[in-house]
Length: 133
Picture 1 (cartoon, rainbow, N blue to C red):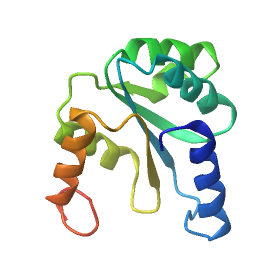
Picture 2 (picture 1 turned 30 degrees about the vertical axis):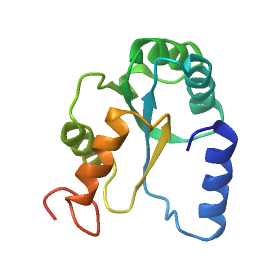
Picture 3 (picture 1 turned 180 degrees about the vertical axis):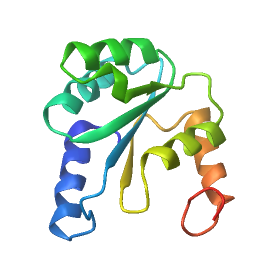
């Protein structure tokens, strides 16, 4: 999701359709150099409206996102900064945090080398998207 309102609407719709079964929600936020305001919007929303068990932050300027999230009440120990991680490392972190009954929401600005790399990595994983499956 590229904006806060769309992400919240998607979450409501998935709950309404019973597609989220109560497992842990993991947020994967990719930050882009030229979208600082959007990063701050997502950081504020995490502690107020979304119930992410954990958040993985990738892309550029991850520290600014983390500072804003913590300042708005999100626990620092539930945020993983992965600014220099490879797509494989990022998806392994998602797998570790979102068991089969959980869900991951990719949000922020995925039109970056990180975002494209994640898509390529997922395409190589098969139909369920989990590593090693």
